[in-house]
Length: 251
Image (cartoon, rainbow, N blue to C red; front, side, top):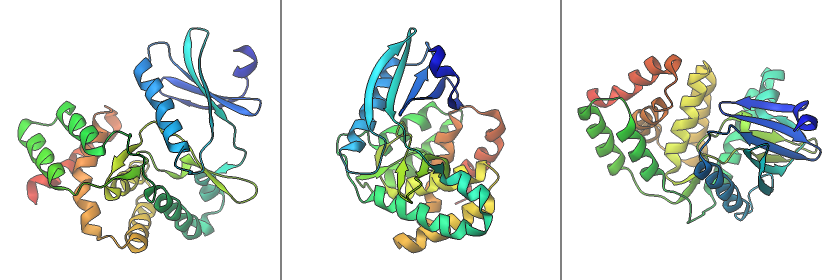
């Protein structure tokens, strides 16, 4: 591990991502769920089989008593970094961002978990009262069943733009199959949680235009998505998310 440690690419909750030669190593904390790690590797393999541009899964191993997933290293900059460096090109980058998301939605992977099953579990596990949970379960049940691949964490920081202008999509740990509007609602909310409200609105308008989806339909998913996000327990997010979840009471 000593030779890997001096090239840390990212540090996230309960995991560290290293560059190791021409590979990337995601090392999980020793108390991380083994089932979740193996499921993430399986998700990555299933997405690879769809033909989407994703870093290839190379191995799952144990290093110094910790589980690790190794994938190929893709050189380039994240779309988030490019947006930060070239604010005048935001519209152009958002256009590419939605096109990539549409490409994901065009694929299917029938063995992935279903988004409705995941969301129902998270609603049940949330801190909201029984009446609110009932409203959210009922709303979720009324939504159309689709089989599109939903990334689950589709943000510009999970897109690498290569020096040649190609792109790769990273981090498939939250992927499910289901309704594209749910994934769009989640992307919108992730922008808002980072204080990027203006970009969130631009993204939503562009998504609805490019996919011929009614804005109101995506918005119907927002209380559900806010509730599922609240289960992560980040105190700084709770007030914002509760405002979104409480929308169900007034509709």
